[in-house]
Length: 541
Image (cartoon, rainbow, N blue to C red; front, top):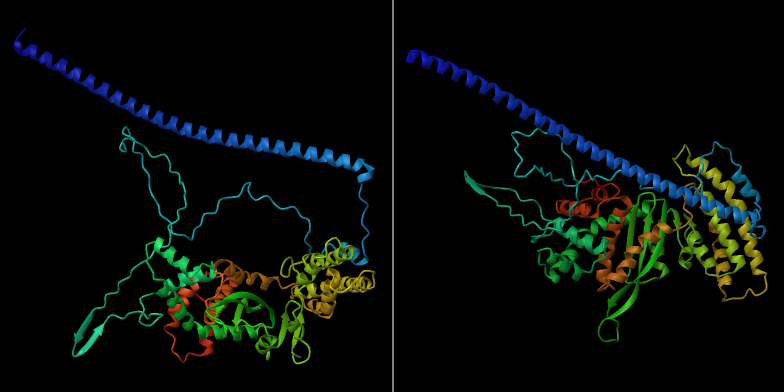
């Protein structure tokens, strides 16, 4: 065989070998892809298996919990059956009065609320709150394993894991660089926004943050200064006091407008509470802490609150002067000054008492059966008052008024008769607890009837008691006002803070906006301009 022929044969065999090798490599590559696909499917199957196992585990826990509840109910039923079978422990059915029978036999069409409806469980099946309105940061986490190759991998799915973080109060130093230009003899420059306080570097938001901590969370100024320092801003204590003082001056017109708005409401609650004030008394050396009174009025229809302070005095002339031109309804406790309202000198005022104050007097008469009976009768008024809600299930103000005028008179007549019997019983002597309670209620009895002349009047003055808590917290945290001027400054902030709370407004956002807006109002701005800035009409700019 020639060498050329032998070379040709070898070349042909080499080509065949190369082709076989190419085919084998292609098959190996296909097998590799198949193996990778099988691995992916196996991973997906394992994930599904884990989810199914988790579901099965939760179902098992739910079944175990249900079995425990069933066993618990069986034990309760067993105990109840023993009580029922024991004749000595059977309870006699209570005898219902005619008014109670009428309330129990109301037509089914009247919407009522069960006084003893069981509370719904709030944990099972409830989704977690997601807080869509807060700042959100998205982090994407990819595999970092050394064997992971993103080119060869195939995407399966993603899963979000949420955590909430808190960043303490942060401060921003904002530098506004003004550029000045000269053109044809005229100077042009960038416009700076108006500052709330003249010749001050502090924005309205800075003052609002201090006011929120001081008057919403009752932190003393010393603690606010320390809190700021802990968060990176060193503020002198004197500067903090001056900022709050100057801001109060800026808010004074708004505060005076608040007084007018509250007095325009036809239904108000009034009260007074004490605070401690550091003052200098004539004839004494140094400063002394004395009790001073802060008055407050809540406009129920507008949702506004007005605190006022007159050198700490509790004289009746202060509330008389405040209400001298008022026309409407006032609700209060039984202080003598309030009881004079609606009578001589105040023909345009109708007064409502507070049933909770009356009830508390009788609850203080421990283990007195007559007092307990009065408390029970007052509770019946509350029970009927809670049966319906105006605006729910077609219940109107007209229906509520008719219902009140139906259930209230029999109960009030029964109370009046019971009070008369108590005054005739042996051992009814002045200075006793029952004497004080009965006398207090008898003085209020004529005004109690006024509560049931309107569908919207409340049975008590609890709304204003809740407002007074901010003064109570101040007594505990700040101990006292530094002066009468400090108390007058505080009532401005408390009026705005509590009004924001009544209206569901963020106090920090409100004061931030109001401070910066007030800086743009001219000194001659009308009352109407300030009226639009009160919490009941305010809209964030």
